[in-house]
Image (cartoon, rainbow, N blue to C red; front, side, top):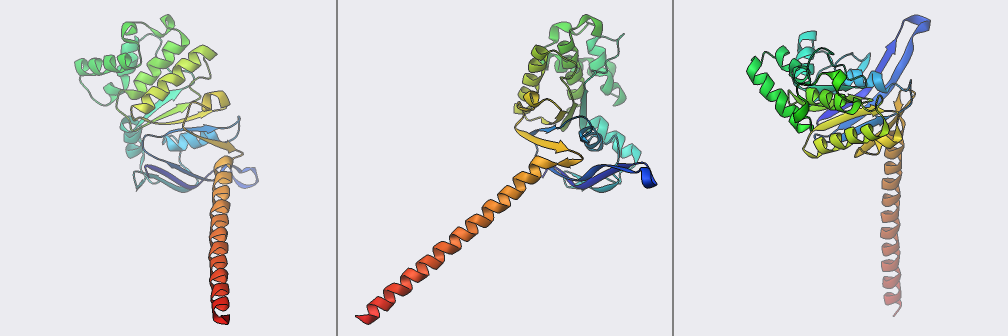
Length: 261
C-alpha cells in the first residue's frame, strides 16, 4: 500500500482544556488514487491533511509512506518530503502578486537548487500541461480565479511529486471555474498522479474515484463500509455452511433410503 495511516490521533491543549480533533483515523491510499475527504467545517479534515502533508505531527498513531514510517522524521527530512514528494494546492492560491505565472511556478525549483534556465524550462512545461502556455508572463492580477488556481496546480506539479494535496481547491472559485479545475485534477489523475483532496462540497467530491466522509474527527463512511463488508462476509460464510449441511443431510438421507432397499 502506498500511503497508510493507522489510528492517527491529534489533540490540542492541556489538562481539562485538551480537545481531541482526530480520534483514531485509519486511512489507506493506493498509488494513482484520487481520494476526497468530505466533511463540514470543524470535522478534522484540515488537521488530517496537515498531518499527511507533513505540516503537523500526530499526537499518536502511525504514518507510513511507501512502507516507511515518517512519524519520527526530523524537520530536515520532513522539509525534503514537502519539497520533493508532496505538491500543495490551496484555496487561496498563495501566488506572489508581483511575480509572473512562470516565476511563481518556478519558485519550488529555486528552493531545490535547479539552475535558472532549466527551472524556467520546466516551469513552462508545467504551465503548458495545465493549459496556460499563453499566460506565462501574466501576473496573478491579470488572471481569472480559475487561471490562478491552474498556476497553483502547475506549481504543485513542477517537482514531479508523488502526491498532490489539495485543500478546498475550488472554494474561492465560481461554479464554472470550479468544474474546470476539477476536470484538470481528473486529467492529472488519469495520467497517474495520486491526489488527496479535502472539501465540504459533495458536488466537487463526486469528481473523485474514492470519497471518504469525515465527521467529528472520524472517517464515518469508511467505518460503515467495513462493517457492511464484514457482515456480507459473515453472511456468505453462513450461507456456505447451510449449503454444506444441506448436502450432508441429503446424502445421509439417500444412503438411509438405499439401505432400506
